[in-house]
Length: 255
Image 1 (tube, one colour):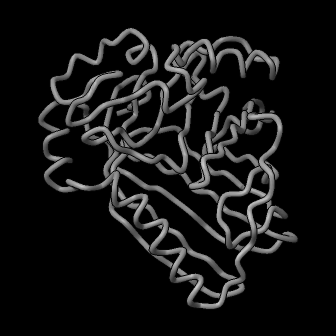
Image 2: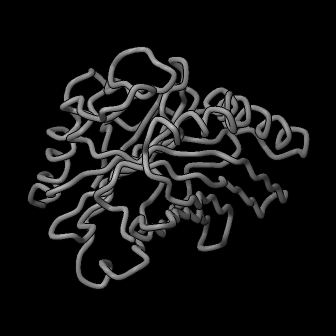
């Protein structure tokens, strides 16, 4: 069953594997929300435990995403796609961590843009813990429309203080169905450096599913930020060189 038009939770694992200059691996159990941004913009999720722009057990704050000013998400995404020469998609789904008790940190937010049932573009919002973010807009057509969706982008914003700016992202993102699979391979000088992935199983979005997710992961959104600093400390103790944060790019997005 295709979940492309369904609001859902994807329950799974985030995995990282670093290959140099020191090997380092970790796995954390997490879940992500997969939501139609029209339902967010029109506040029609219809759930008791998940609210838009107000405090709840779970919430989506539009100021966390897109234009970052609390305004609707669709016009912002459509503007990015128009700049890339693309028409407005029929549906746009956002993949992100919802706030829990008002708190969340999203290292990566992904938008799946569909036209005539096919993913015609992907938009990646990458954030770091220094307060910077950068948006990578990726049109998909021709050979790239096959599964999985494969695309590359040069790294344009400092993310980890243990990886330099001289790197390339290689994305592999199959259209979400019963399983959502997102893999990012980072290379330097055409050699593997790091692989990060999220693989999750589809669960229809209901209040019951949200409550179960809370029971299984009561502090998940806090854990995400704590884990980032915990794993960074381990890299430091392994002797991986610390790289000072450069100035972020002047433009917030790239195509």
